[in-house]
Image (cartoon, rainbow, N blue to C red):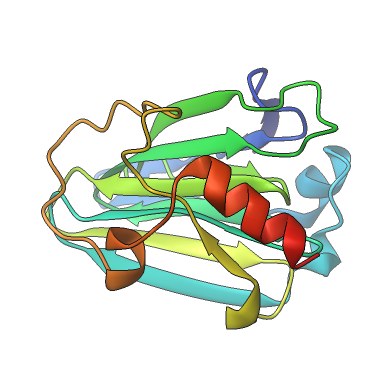
Length: 185
Protein backbone atom coordinates (compact mmCIF):
# COMPACT_ATOMS: atom_id res chain seq x y z
CA UNK A 1 0.00 0.00 0.00
CA UNK A 2 1.23 3.48 -0.76
CA UNK A 3 0.14 7.02 0.14
CA UNK A 4 -0.28 9.42 -2.79
CA UNK A 5 -0.85 13.14 -2.10
CA UNK A 6 -3.82 14.74 -3.89
CA UNK A 7 -2.25 17.94 -5.29
CA UNK A 8 -5.57 19.77 -5.72
CA UNK A 9 -6.43 19.51 -1.98
CA UNK A 10 -3.76 20.21 0.66
CA UNK A 11 -3.57 17.34 3.14
CA UNK A 12 -5.74 14.94 1.10
CA UNK A 13 -4.31 11.54 0.18
CA UNK A 14 -5.16 8.49 -1.84
CA UNK A 15 -4.14 5.21 -0.24
CA UNK A 16 -3.54 2.77 -3.06
CA UNK A 17 -3.42 -0.91 -2.08
CA UNK A 18 -1.50 -3.67 -3.79
CA UNK A 19 -4.09 -6.40 -4.36
CA UNK A 20 -3.07 -10.03 -4.64
CA UNK A 21 -4.98 -11.38 -7.63
CA UNK A 22 -5.40 -15.00 -8.70
CA UNK A 23 -8.04 -17.26 -10.23
CA UNK A 24 -10.20 -16.94 -7.08
CA UNK A 25 -10.41 -13.15 -7.25
CA UNK A 26 -8.33 -10.82 -5.10
CA UNK A 27 -7.20 -10.10 -1.56
CA UNK A 28 -6.36 -6.52 -0.61
CA UNK A 29 -5.29 -4.72 2.54
CA UNK A 30 -7.55 -1.67 2.74
CA UNK A 31 -6.05 -0.04 5.83
CA UNK A 32 -2.45 0.01 7.06
CA UNK A 33 -1.74 2.13 10.15
CA UNK A 34 1.95 2.55 9.28
CA UNK A 35 1.20 3.84 5.78
CA UNK A 36 -1.44 6.23 7.17
CA UNK A 37 1.05 7.40 9.80
CA UNK A 38 3.70 7.95 7.08
CA UNK A 39 1.31 10.52 5.53
CA UNK A 40 1.19 12.45 8.81
CA UNK A 41 -2.25 11.17 9.80
CA UNK A 42 -2.87 9.61 13.21
CA UNK A 43 -4.35 6.17 12.50
CA UNK A 44 -5.49 5.85 16.12
CA UNK A 45 -7.60 8.99 15.77
CA UNK A 46 -10.39 7.23 13.86
CA UNK A 47 -13.33 6.31 16.10
CA UNK A 48 -16.21 5.20 13.89
CA UNK A 49 -16.72 3.04 10.80
CA UNK A 50 -19.86 3.33 8.66
CA UNK A 51 -21.07 2.04 5.30
CA UNK A 52 -23.69 3.24 2.83
CA UNK A 53 -25.30 1.36 -0.05
CA UNK A 54 -26.64 3.41 -2.95
CA UNK A 55 -28.54 2.58 -6.11
CA UNK A 56 -27.40 3.82 -9.53
CA UNK A 57 -27.58 7.61 -9.73
CA UNK A 58 -28.08 8.23 -6.01
CA UNK A 59 -26.25 11.38 -5.00
CA UNK A 60 -25.03 11.89 -1.43
CA UNK A 61 -23.55 15.25 -0.51
CA UNK A 62 -22.06 17.73 -0.31
CA UNK A 63 -21.47 17.30 3.43
CA UNK A 64 -19.08 18.51 6.09
CA UNK A 65 -19.09 19.29 9.80
CA UNK A 66 -18.90 22.61 11.63
CA UNK A 67 -16.71 23.13 14.67
CA UNK A 68 -13.48 21.11 14.45
CA UNK A 69 -14.72 19.48 11.26
CA UNK A 70 -14.40 15.80 10.53
CA UNK A 71 -11.63 13.92 8.77
CA UNK A 72 -12.49 10.65 7.09
CA UNK A 73 -11.17 7.79 5.03
CA UNK A 74 -13.60 6.96 2.21
CA UNK A 75 -13.50 3.81 0.07
CA UNK A 76 -15.88 2.29 -2.46
CA UNK A 77 -15.90 -1.34 -1.39
CA UNK A 78 -18.31 -2.52 -4.11
CA UNK A 79 -19.33 -0.93 -7.41
CA UNK A 80 -18.16 2.50 -8.56
CA UNK A 81 -18.77 6.09 -7.45
CA UNK A 82 -17.96 9.55 -8.76
CA UNK A 83 -16.38 11.11 -5.68
CA UNK A 84 -15.96 14.83 -4.97
CA UNK A 85 -13.96 16.70 -2.36
CA UNK A 86 -14.01 20.51 -2.01
CA UNK A 87 -11.53 22.36 0.21
CA UNK A 88 -13.51 24.81 2.37
CA UNK A 89 -10.73 25.67 4.85
CA UNK A 90 -10.20 29.45 4.52
CA UNK A 91 -6.56 29.19 5.65
CA UNK A 92 -5.70 26.38 3.21
CA UNK A 93 -3.48 27.04 0.18
CA UNK A 94 -6.02 25.03 -1.86
CA UNK A 95 -9.12 26.84 -0.51
CA UNK A 96 -12.11 26.31 -2.84
CA UNK A 97 -10.25 23.74 -4.99
CA UNK A 98 -12.10 20.59 -6.01
CA UNK A 99 -11.00 17.08 -6.81
CA UNK A 100 -13.25 14.67 -8.71
CA UNK A 101 -12.28 11.02 -8.99
CA UNK A 102 -13.75 7.60 -9.44
CA UNK A 103 -13.49 5.19 -6.54
CA UNK A 104 -14.27 1.55 -7.20
CA UNK A 105 -14.48 -1.82 -5.55
CA UNK A 106 -12.09 -3.12 -8.19
CA UNK A 107 -9.22 -0.91 -7.00
CA UNK A 108 -10.13 -0.47 -3.29
CA UNK A 109 -8.35 2.92 -3.28
CA UNK A 110 -9.12 4.95 -0.15
CA UNK A 111 -9.44 8.75 -0.14
CA UNK A 112 -8.44 10.72 2.96
CA UNK A 113 -10.69 13.78 3.30
CA UNK A 114 -9.21 16.34 5.71
CA UNK A 115 -11.42 18.09 8.26
CA UNK A 116 -12.93 21.24 6.76
CA UNK A 117 -13.45 19.75 3.31
CA UNK A 118 -16.90 19.03 1.87
CA UNK A 119 -17.41 15.55 0.47
CA UNK A 120 -20.02 13.84 -1.68
CA UNK A 121 -20.44 11.13 -4.27
CA UNK A 122 -22.78 9.71 -6.87
CA UNK A 123 -23.30 5.98 -7.44
CA UNK A 124 -22.25 4.88 -10.94
CA UNK A 125 -23.38 1.28 -10.43
CA UNK A 126 -26.31 -0.51 -8.86
CA UNK A 127 -25.42 -0.95 -6.06
CA UNK A 128 -22.39 1.00 -4.87
CA UNK A 129 -21.16 0.50 -1.30
CA UNK A 130 -19.05 3.21 0.33
CA UNK A 131 -17.18 2.69 3.60
CA UNK A 132 -16.21 5.56 5.88
CA UNK A 133 -13.71 5.66 8.75
CA UNK A 134 -14.34 8.87 10.72
CA UNK A 135 -12.24 10.67 13.33
CA UNK A 136 -15.13 11.97 15.47
CA UNK A 137 -18.36 10.56 16.81
CA UNK A 138 -21.30 11.82 14.77
CA UNK A 139 -23.08 14.88 16.16
CA UNK A 140 -26.12 15.86 14.05
CA UNK A 141 -25.97 19.41 15.48
CA UNK A 142 -22.73 19.93 13.52
CA UNK A 143 -23.97 18.60 10.17
CA UNK A 144 -23.56 21.01 7.26
CA UNK A 145 -24.92 20.33 3.79
CA UNK A 146 -24.31 22.33 0.61
CA UNK A 147 -26.50 22.23 -2.47
CA UNK A 148 -25.05 19.61 -4.82
CA UNK A 149 -26.00 21.81 -7.77
CA UNK A 150 -24.70 25.12 -6.42
CA UNK A 151 -23.56 27.11 -9.49
CA UNK A 152 -20.58 28.44 -7.56
CA UNK A 153 -19.27 24.88 -7.19
CA UNK A 154 -20.40 23.73 -10.67
CA UNK A 155 -19.63 20.08 -9.89
CA UNK A 156 -19.85 18.03 -13.10
CA UNK A 157 -22.02 15.19 -11.76
CA UNK A 158 -22.00 12.46 -14.42
CA UNK A 159 -25.69 11.47 -14.11
CA UNK A 160 -28.92 13.24 -13.27
CA UNK A 161 -29.57 12.54 -9.57
CA UNK A 162 -31.80 9.48 -9.25
CA UNK A 163 -32.50 10.15 -5.59
CA UNK A 164 -31.57 12.70 -2.92
CA UNK A 165 -32.17 12.78 0.82
CA UNK A 166 -34.47 15.46 2.22
CA UNK A 167 -31.38 17.07 3.72
CA UNK A 168 -29.67 17.25 0.32
CA UNK A 169 -32.82 18.45 -1.47
CA UNK A 170 -33.08 21.39 0.91
CA UNK A 171 -29.37 22.13 1.25
CA UNK A 172 -28.41 25.81 1.07
CA UNK A 173 -25.91 27.40 -1.28
CA UNK A 174 -22.21 27.29 -0.48
CA UNK A 175 -22.25 30.91 0.71
CA UNK A 176 -25.22 30.34 3.02
CA UNK A 177 -23.81 27.06 4.40
CA UNK A 178 -20.41 28.62 5.15
CA UNK A 179 -22.05 31.56 6.89
CA UNK A 180 -24.18 29.22 9.00
CA UNK A 181 -21.23 26.93 9.83
CA UNK A 182 -19.11 29.89 10.98
CA UNK A 183 -21.92 30.95 13.26
CA UNK A 184 -21.84 27.52 14.97
CA UNK A 185 -18.07 27.31 15.59
